Length: 390
Image (cartoon, rainbow, N blue to C red; front, side):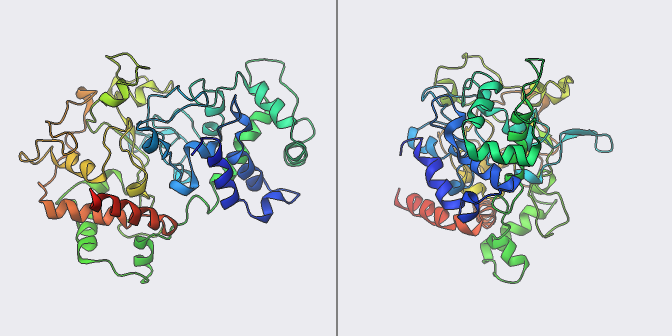
C-alpha cells in the first residue's frame, strides 16, 4: 500500500456525512485535518499515516517495511522512537509535576515534551524527519488554500485568525488553532470507545475465559506482579480505566540494534527519555519514558519506546526476567537479554514480583488481549492465525 493512500482510506471510514457539511464543529474540522496529507511537504502523509484508525491508531506500515520506527514524508527519514498509539491519548492530563506524588505526570509524546494534545498535533508537520514543512507559515498558507478551512477557521476562531504575528518565532494563531481542532477530534469517542471484552465483562456482557480471568487476577494483584503499579489509574475494575497512570519510568529497556542499523543514529546513541524534555533537568529522570496505555496493546506492536520487542509475550517475559533466573533468554533472539540502555535509573524495586510460570505468562497475555477495542478484534484474530501458522 502506498503511504498516501492510508489517510484516504481511513478518512472514508471515519468521515461520514458530517465531515462534508457546513458549518463544521471544531471536532469535525479536526477530523478533516487529521486525515489531510496537505500538511506534509510532499502531500503524501497525514496524522492518520502514523496513527491509522484501522490499526489501533498506530503505524503498521512498519510491519511491511520491516522497520521499527515510522518513515517520514520523504520516504527514507526515520525518527528515533516507536510512534505510540493515539487511541486514549485524551486520557492524559496536561504535563506537570505532581508535588504530592513527587513525579512528572501527563503530557504527550514519550517524553511529555508536548503539554497537551494540541501542542502535540503541531509538532509532526514541522519535524524534518516526519512531515517536514519548513515552517508554520507554510502550514497556514496551505490552510488558506482550502476554502472549507478558511470558512471554518474564521467562523470558529475569529476574523484575524490567519494574521501572522509580528515575531516570526511566535506560533501563528491559525497554526495553534490547527492543533486545537485536532485535539477536539482526538477527544471524541472515535479515539476512546471503551467497548473491549474487558469493558463488556464489567457490564456483564462478556464472560472471561479461565485463562483471561487468571490474567486479570495476576494483573491487579500486588502479590504476584506489579503491572497495576504503572498501568492502573483508578480502583480495580473501574469503568473507563486508561490502563496507565500517565507517569514515567525506566524499566531497563535495552537499545534496539535494528533501530541503530537504519544508519540514521550514531552507534553509541542513547535515548535519555524524560531527561530530553526541556522542562526536566534532574538526572534521576534519565531514561524514563511515559507509561503507555495498555488498551489495544495486542494489536499495536512493536513494543517499548524504540520498538525493540515484536511480540507481546516477549514483553511479559522481559518483565519476568528481573525475578525469574530461568528467564535468561530473549525468546525473539534466543540470546541473553541485552543490558538496559540507561542502567543507573532502572526502577528495580517496582519491577520486583513473583516469578511467572509459562501458564501465568499466557494468562497475562490473554488478559491484555481483552483490552482490544471491539472494532480491532478482527485484527487480533488475524494476528493469532499468523502466529499459529508459523
